[in-house]
Image (spheres, rainbow, N blue to C red):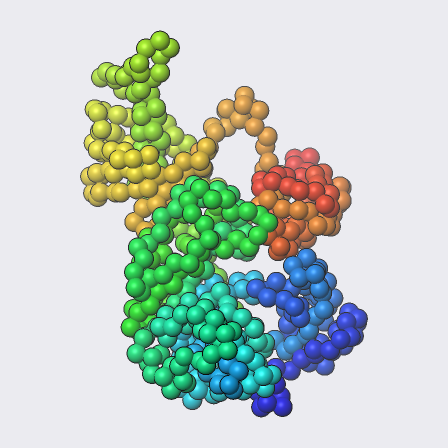
Length: 555
């Protein structure tokens, strides 16, 4: 690449892989450095070492994940740009020496070094820099005699305006629909043309003319994962799935339908949502509206997080960098208070479900008998718990009282808030319409045993039916207050503590693997280990205790 006049980031890309040698190279480059698997991709096998003292630990973690994901742990060490953007250029080349750039994509919004929002054109980029990126990408492809589709990836330094070649992926990537939206071209068709020995369908000038007319496109990756717990993957059955309407400017590429199982053995991506608009502002508004219409019940997804990103002021202004999520963490992870009418709708949903189940009772030897209700309606109390999604905060408990006053009419109490004469109907198994004194609410209601999911006014709410404390002992429910639980179905790779050991908050306890990704489970507080429940190699279900602490009273 250097010989082809393509700027390269300082780093070590040699065959010597002794950890101490790599450590010496890191010292020469200067911290922070990026450790990356040579055969890596999708953010796997990547770690950042900020200091010499943490280098070997981060190196071993990256190598372990690389072996698991790619069967190869050869690493490279590169200078880590502190305020970078990730900008890539889609190129195509044929056997006649033609090579074109089909625009660039900004993929800076990432977690775990993996993209979740991609867009084209890249915002806040001078036209001279844009054209230089395209030119360098073409030079990179021509330098190796490349044919077919390729993605040339660059690191752009926000502080200096410089960019550096990072790698070339010799294929179409997950985010290629963004480029298809801004060029109007089917890139898979282009691949077939080139593979058959044909010439590229368009010249560079024709491509640029098309890009100039087609505005802006954005792609959001929909994942089964919990953003509040460092984006750990989730899994499970898609109990409910409703997608936004598909149009010429709204596209969904999906691998799942309602009823499918998101497995813990594969990548947790559920779908890609792509929108196009005449301007970036219009595209962002369209993306926000599409995400509000996207409903998934079952596994936790990143949809609510993506909604916050799309209205985050700095993101709307185009001030992007790969560390955006960490930089704006307080804004993006603020816990919102659930409004009383949401809890009221949840209780109404349960109450209407119970009434529906009671009204038609099968009796042996007879057709179904309809059970009538008299004037003496009973009051019911429903107990909900809203767990802190990050697993660290306290749960919020609520008790909602519902009393039916006449068919279809209810009085509801949520704490000190009373709703009188609320009329409510259950249009289907998952649809509730209620008329409160101050508003009408249409809610999608999904129940999975003790878990309740609501979709209302473009937002998702997740509640847990709570068992009253007095009933826990009678039902034999195990108290897991002092346990560290597996956040997802997983395999235990390593246990770093033993029984009787004193540990500090955030100390590593167990390393697990799920969906080919390693996750370090850390101590939520200072304490003493009472029991190590699982050993290396064990397979665990989500919610299984991994480590138990000595209760504070016994410590």
